[in-house]
Length: 204
Image (cartoon, rainbow, N blue to C red; front, side):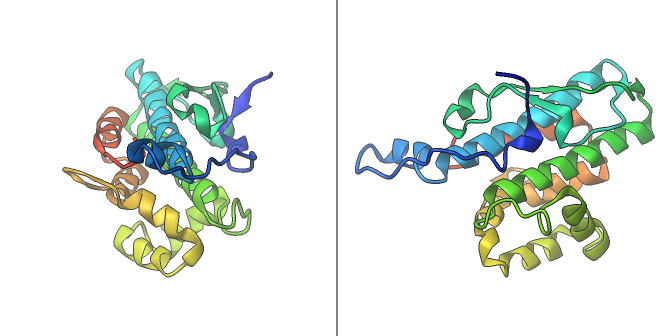
């Protein structure tokens, strides 16, 4: 019972199914990291959809963080049923270009923290995968140069699944480019959502 927040998800214990021999498609989707990849992907799309929904109404949230998103479930095995809603609208105001970009930058930090915390082999690590640590890494260390960020992450064995997640592509580029575009706020939430939905992975 109660309200589940996105911030709670990375630390939640999950049931992990072991592989069976058949069928191979279900084996990829529903065992091992398959459900977790799918949950995180659906959560990313849900974050973008929620931001798009308020921006379409001419409203800026102005205070987005991981606790701002209400989740219908935190269970990986229910990834296909996930619904995400944007809450905590106490600082909301009229949408301007600066505020639109600000919302998307904040959403990018939320999404990056989610992916790194949820898919790191060592689990959520407040020292390395907190919002502040991820923001510092991408903004201050790499100045949103996603090629350099990827090269750094590839060298971290515990982030293998993180790299795999961001490496999946659509026709316009990979997830790293999508994250960078979200962070810079150069595209609308609607455009970013369309790109996120176009990315296909073996876990879908």
